Length: 243
Image 1 (tube, rainbow, N blue to C red):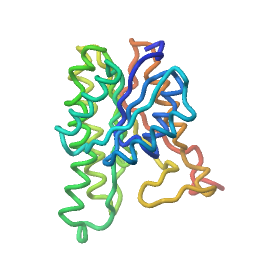
Image 2: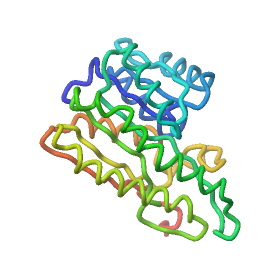
Image 3: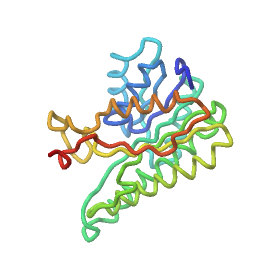
Image 4: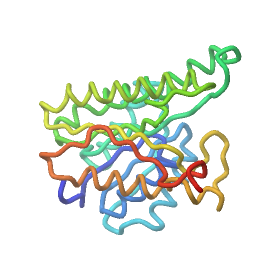
């Protein structure tokens, strides 16, 4: 996609954090953006913020949708089509984390993590696949370095992100015959509200949400012959690496 003007992106969990950073970056490139949240109030608020500082040639809308429901995601895709007529870029970003020893991990926490972080991206591609075939578009999942590096207390989160990384790579092989490009981005520490963090100056060493936004713009504007299918991205100098 050498020219992004007039394209349309659907971003799950796009009202804050990484999803919002991606939405803002795409909007500035002239891409119409639909951001989803579990509540219409949060989705509308994010769309209002995006439209207040975006590109005059592009529009952001908010849609209430639950990534754990294929029906809900299909309805969201239909709303995007009614509004913009096409879906060119899909970002499976919505995610959450429950952390702690497997001894303490509850069934509810396990199911919520897997249903959101792994089944959610499956429903996202199922809901948008027909349109991505038509547009020969781009599907990007937001995994994590936790999708290749396991750690104590991460049983549910590691499982979901290891699964998402493998899922997305298999989807890439399934769909490239249709001209659909598929990538997964695996960030390390990002300055977001994830896991109850409150971003402040102490997070300056972390990846910033605008950095992931720029990375997505770089991916979707890369020459069609080239596909970075799995991208690890990490802070240049974390506190543990400082001398």
